[in-house]
Length: 189
Image (cartoon, rainbow, N blue to C red; front, side):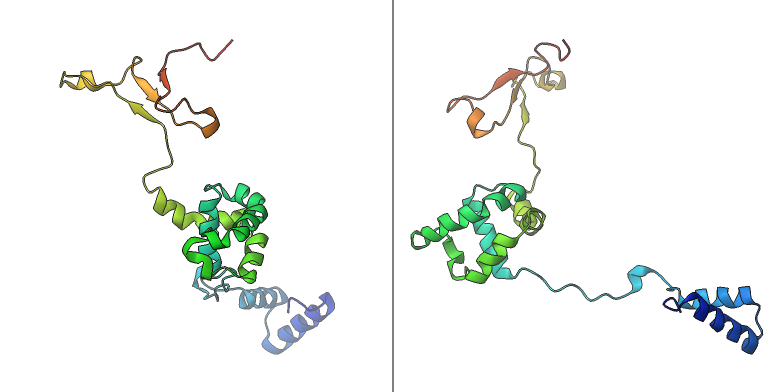
């Protein structure tokens, strides 16, 4: 009925009113109810989409991610071509590790066509298994004290914060950044 023209819908209503004896408004209302879905949309069983990327592609993607230095999907998508070319050149030296038997031209084409969001979605399980406790790399190093009272173990402004840095900003080897917490110039001018 939805695909019918206005004139055809009018004729259907006229026929229904004449044969059943309903008013025109009631006939329109009853037809509208008949075409509505009943129940929850979740109740409909939908056929799941077939997977676009196979097991081989996901395993090779995980290896490429590790070789590239575990970047986010946005950066991995940007360097996927050069990384695969580099790994192709070093196939005999073990760049693909255990997944070298899974790497094929089809897998390569799928990896190059993959979006950043898809890369992040496919790598999410391995990322969670590698870093299960959390994503923070900053922690407070509390000063140790011989005094067992709780007040002695409470952090204060003289405690130090150990901060993880990017490789280019890292302090010299063996040294940690020991910036006092809460000490420094105010954030306003």
